[in-house]
Image 1 (tube, rainbow, N blue to C red):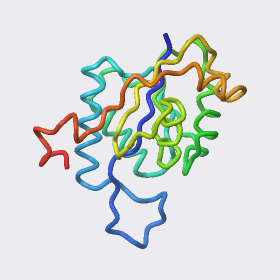
Image 2: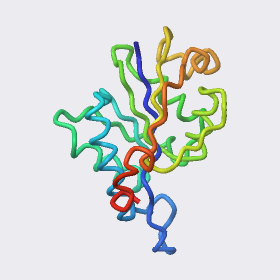
Image 3: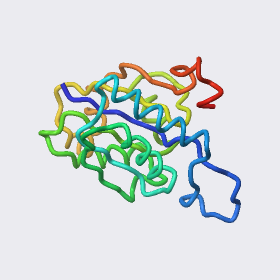
Image 4: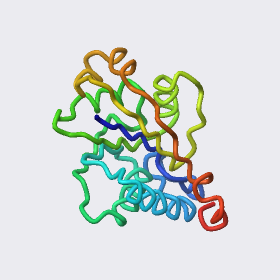
Length: 176
């Protein structure tokens, strides 16, 4: 069974108003949360075979923090269309994945990710920074995400959403 993980980048730093939006880095809380989510995913055997990532600095830094916890880093592809991104851009990127790939992580931005999670889950779900939606993809080809998006979405099932604050409530001061 195929698996699609949708991840929002970790908390970004707003202390540099002169930076373009795409150039904003993570803040300290974001760096801690991204690392914690990398470890969380590794422990849950949710390490993907392929990561599709936005070119924005905060997404790239989130990826770097995730990878520090994985012994065998997966293939990573930076895709320009994932910034700022829309559900259509995200599904288009997923539609380019090779059929032999079983687990894909798409790391990008809101509001597009939250909208896509809502489309798949059938209800509004908060999708904070560093959250990961775990989606089971039914018997449908990856390419149908791009070519027949409604059919692809219909065959997906939102299993759960992992949110850093809920996962690490006992360490809230550390994660933020």
